[in-house]
Length: 384
Image (cartoon, rainbow, N blue to C red; front, side, top):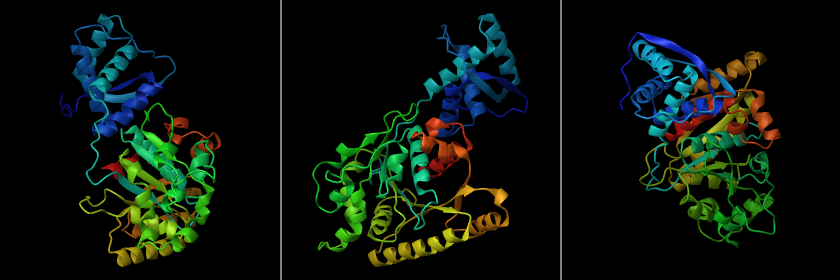
């Protein structure tokens, strides 16, 4: 069924819907690329055409919902609800469920060049690399992509954020695989991150404290180019299982970061922008200083290895306009760079901190929060 035209005579629909149904509609409409009001209109049309009674939907614990539908359709729908002996909100819930069932998450074809690879990196700590990696990975999983989150920081904040411990230092790990000390398949170390909207699509490769030894091990390697390519080689088997591999980078300018940059490069035959690096920053001067160092590292590596690394953009994190001129002028300065562009501004709100404290994914703890919506916006930009 095609999207309806946009007549001027639309009425505002105000009702209450179950929170999960409302959230599913919001995510699915964005994923398939149509406005919510058109999705609801299509659902109402399908509901009115249904030849058999539909299953009742539990509308308890509902929240407010509003949108716009064509006036004539809205009037006929309300009359049909009355004729079928159904409360209006029950009819609308059934109509939305019909639309969701008719518009499942799209089948995601794996790109021939392998999983798309996104590194979240900045030499400065505390700017939000882990929060961005986790949130965007969750949002991509909501959209139907299979996502592997790689905790490449030996501090293991991403691992701890989801309530897991570091891998035991005497066991297998990503670093051991990178340094030729593999004991098992890395895929055996993956942990599924539960969430109703994630399905079985979101997984974590936990950190191990042996990551602090990585630079020393790589610098002593005699293999040509192993210093920059070890991460890619180690993740080859993992890539086959996923659509996106998200790397949460350490706050470092050493070989670990070289590996992450090289891993996120544009591969031969891969469309520009399919993979790349996202740079979380804050609206203050030390982030700008750290970015200058990272920019030099990226440019130097591209020149030395003859590769291209696509800048997916800046995310300005922990933004609080109440802090005045320092943050507002800093945000203006980030935007004035032009390239990379500022793709999102994340306000300094409590939801992410609460999710970390509760060891729960942000999009599970506060799925309707402003921070969750920004993560979805970033994910859509990356996936386009």
